[in-house]
Structures are given as structure tokens and as C-alpha cells.
Length: 263
Image (cartoon, rainbow, N blue to C red; front, side):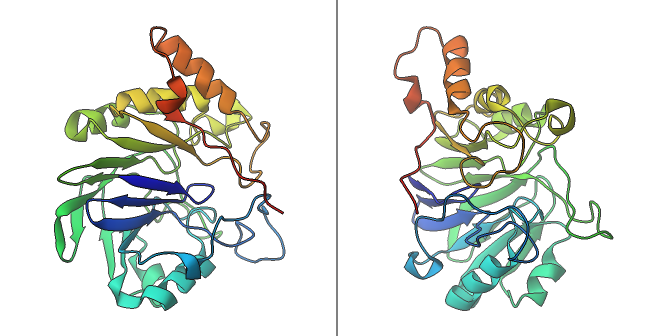
């Protein structure tokens, strides 16, 4: 398995003869328009034109920093119907209106595959979050995580989430995972964010609950979305030290990759 973090919640995963993206966003703002809204302070490491052939995209929910209209349209223009989109319940119509043809809409615990790759299963699994893009569509789209199960590797994508017992269920059903992508950012103030965004300590709890062998931190270092400092990766390391006092080289267990300089 090979994983490349492309910023925020987007990772490119190469596993079991497939390449897929999670919640891709290549735009400069996480917003319905590009002249206002949360702006990237670090750009993506590549363009859509520079990507290899992508077989699938998984979407966790419909918030603008996870479902970016311009990125969806650009990926569809490049890859067309060869690209399979796995989306939550309630999002099929939105995707089709943006020209996407190869779209699979799933409820929690439902699963599907990429044509020609039946040995790799994409399971839409629960999380604790919510959805809203307009004033009139509160929670009309489901939210969730993704468990991708192959003959040689297993990958877990937590999406956007607060901590909940569903992660223990996922770990028991589908674990252990070779790698998990778990959010660590946009968690302050806790009284407001705790039910929708885990903090770094809770991210480590997810790592343990889903039985991940290794995890990579996502949902940080790209957009300034909350009140915490932009880099709080040290808190993951401190929590790992508390959970695994006998272990060394903990940075290989829950990886918090550094961003390269970007202008």
C-alpha cells in the first residue's frame, strides 16, 4: 500500500491494483464561491492534470471542505465514466447534475466495488457528524467513514467525525486495518466542536478502536477552520506515549507528515 497526503482530508491511496482519492479538494477556498470563505494557506502538492489514473473517489459527506464542486467537475472532465464515485445516501442527484455518471450511493454498512476489481470492497461505515450545504438541506445527505477491504490490504478513512462507539464496531467487523487516515484538526472550541470533530487525543482513540496498525493524520495544515493553533501534531505524539509507554518510534504508528514549504 502507498498513500500520498494531498492536503486537508484528501489522500491518494494505491492498494491492491487500485488508485483512489478521499474527499478531494484542489480549490483555493472551501466555499460555494472562490472569492470568500476559508482559504488554503498551503496549496495542493499537485494539480488534477498531474494525477495518475484514478479508479475511484470516496466522499464522506457534503460539507464544502470535503465535497468541492470545482474539483468534482474537473476530475469528471479528466476521467469521465471510467471514474467510479462512492458517495453517501442522498448525494446521487447532486453528483449527476455535475455530469458524473458512474456514481454509487450507499447507506451505512452497504458495500460495492469498482468494475473489474471485485476483490476490493468499498464499505460505507458510520461516523458522528452532520451535513449542510444550503439553508434548506440540513442533514438531507448522510455522513460517514469508509472501510476499503482488499485481498492484501485494508484501509480506513474516518472522514469528519466526533468520537463514537461506531469505531469499535468497525474495528471488530473489518479490522485490523493496515492504515487509517484520521482527522486531528478543527476541534476548538471543544464545547462546540466535540460532537463533530475529534481532537488529537480522540484521534488516537479512533486509531486504537478500529485496530489500525498505522495511521496518518489528516484534516489539518491546509485550511484555518477553527480556533486551535495551526499545528497541534505534538498532541498526537503525547497521547501515543500515554497509550503505548513501552513503544519506541511512535511517529511510525500515527504519522503526522510535515508539509513542504509552499508559496
